[in-house]
Image (tube, rainbow, N blue to C red):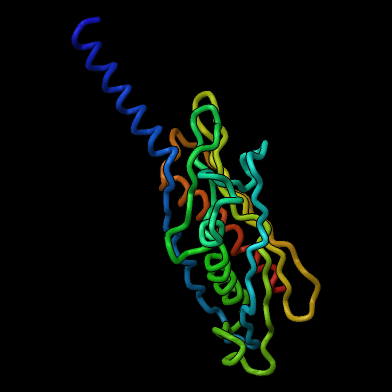
Amino acid sequence: MNQHARILSLALLAATAVLAGCATSRSEIDLPAAPQAVATKTPTATAYIRTVRDARVFEEAPGEPRTPSLGFGGSAQATADIKARAVGRKRNTFGKALGDILLKDGQTAESVIRDQLGAALSEAGYRVAPDAAQAGPDAVPVDASITKFWTWFTPGFWAITVSADIATDITIGDGAAKSVVAYAEDKKQVAADGTWIDILSLALDDYRKKAAEAFRR
């Protein structure tokens, strides 16, 4: 092997090692806040978000990448904070699950959905109060249970398919629960931290629009 080929081989090995190290570690991502709704008319009703509950179920070594799971000892060893912030798993080129993808410290699946629901209520024409005390006696309470909030990728020959699932069961006042389900996917060459932010942002945009439609009914 000549010197040029040897240098190239060493460089490729080093790059592979770096990528492997990144894939096996935990990453933290910062999702942007929901955009502020532009009021087209004066709100005639007030609503407040009473509860948002993370009801996702984590499994140990699931067969499907879209099923929530955790590395570093699995969900049984994970703290409540880690589970609340977990939104995906990194994978190698063969699809093997490696490190975790977490929301930044202080951001959780519950806080993100609460933010999106607030924006959706505004888009639907409600005045959104921060809590029951400031809402007034005639305000409509909203409760949400998160059943899906996860991102993953599926290996492909030329590109990977990056996907995100978001789903909640929402109760508006005394009404029956409504399911709001959103999904997004895109083709990428690599899966970096920005990739997860982009695909989750797409899914959240879809989720917010569908939630606003549910609030209008």
